[in-house]
Image (tube, rainbow, N blue to C red):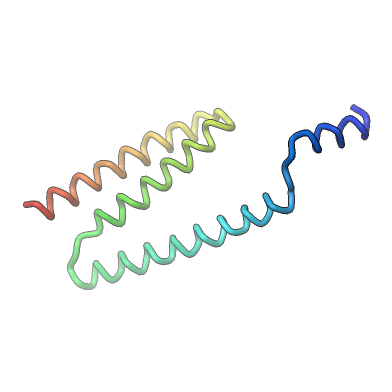
Length: 103
């Protein structure tokens, strides 16, 4: 492929690599901060004798849907397995939490 063809194809996609880079960095730091907050809340709940199922429900649902998005793009079996397991774990933890609150 010639240089002009590559540039033309890139322009046709209308994607700005700078914007994508910034969005990726934002997600990277957001996930790190979210993980630290989950750990802090889990530690607090553990110290207070509280249940962590709702935190686990949020975490596993996030992990599952992130993997599902990666699977839809890359079609790698490991992402599909992670998606199914994560979403299932999220739903089960939510059910456990709801049953605990209602019971």
